[in-house]
Amino acid sequence: MSEMLDYDIKAAMALLDEKLKAAQPKRRGRKQLLAPYADQLRRYVAAGWSRKEIVAEMKALGISISAGTLRQVLGSKPSHRASKAA
Image 1 (cartoon, rainbow, N blue to C red):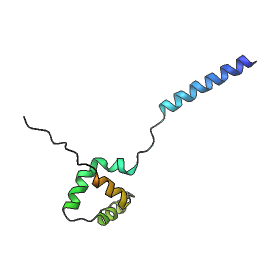
Image 2 (image 1 turned 90 degrees about the vertical axis):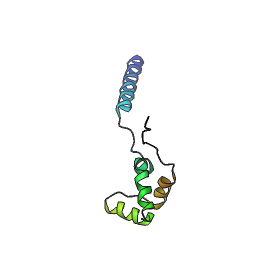
Image 3 (image 1 turned 30 degrees about the vertical axis):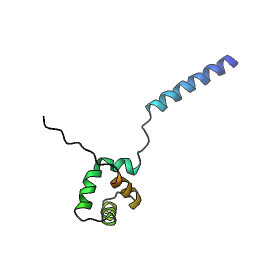
Image 4 (image 1 turned 45 degrees about the horizontal axis):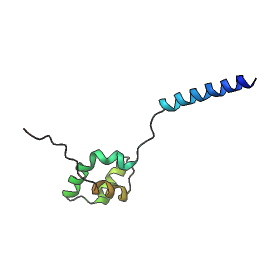
């Protein structure tokens, strides 16, 4: 009987492993979600928008973000995606 239990446990563990591998990754944090838009957000700040105004506009669009997170995103290094002309 213990052989049957061992087999059942091994089978259940194998199924659980498969389910965990197929599971969707966890939702990324706000900072990671905004990272691709950091350059655009910096342009808004350079154009005279305050961080408070940006947070308010994002909130109006349904994107909840704190001023601290926005500050972290804006403080990160700008991405240089422009291709170099040969």
